[in-house]
Amino acid sequence: MRTKRLIGVESGYSNVSEFVKHDLDLPDDVRRGVVVSLPLIAEIEDAALRNKVIDAWALALCENGYGAVEELPGSGMPGAPEVGDQTHHLLGVTRIALGIKDSLEKTLDEPLGVSRDVVLAAALCHDLGKPFEYAPENRRRWDTNPGAYGRPSLRHPTYGAHIAMVVDMPEEVVNTCGYHSPEGRFIDRSLAATIVHYADDAYWFTLEVAKNWETKVPRL
Image (cartoon, rainbow, N blue to C red):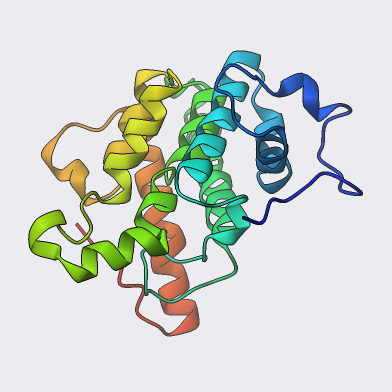
């Protein structure tokens, strides 16, 4: 398992280790690699929430045979067109989500009703379940016997909500993980999930036109 390390890499922290918890017994190098891979984590002011984002990604990666977010292809689902790796998507969606929040608040001259920290965490974690959905061993098992397991047995939003709950994420972040995708048709999304849902769609469907390819990402 390849693990991205901090040696010679600027992380945005003066000492990354101080932001990394150890009570989930996950490899320190994977935790530190998450911080390097997703530098916008440094903008989360609440230390507890910041650590939960690190924990969540480290747990999702390690449970599914990955060592770094960059090992996941930059696509919306397995087999779909790729743009960079998964860090490009996560950071792109996070920046778009912050833009939605900031633009509406500036235009209306009033708070939108969700904190910047929560939007950051929700956007950075919205695809926590992709390591499960993309894992080659899982895909081989599902392809071999879809009647037994389903194909996939869980889509990434469901597994992502599971990971978010394991690390005790705020409920609005769990909601975003589980319902940023078309699964959200069946509930009322939280404000954070609504923002991330539209940011996610903006990312994929703008690139679909710009690059003249089919994203294969489900539309509502």
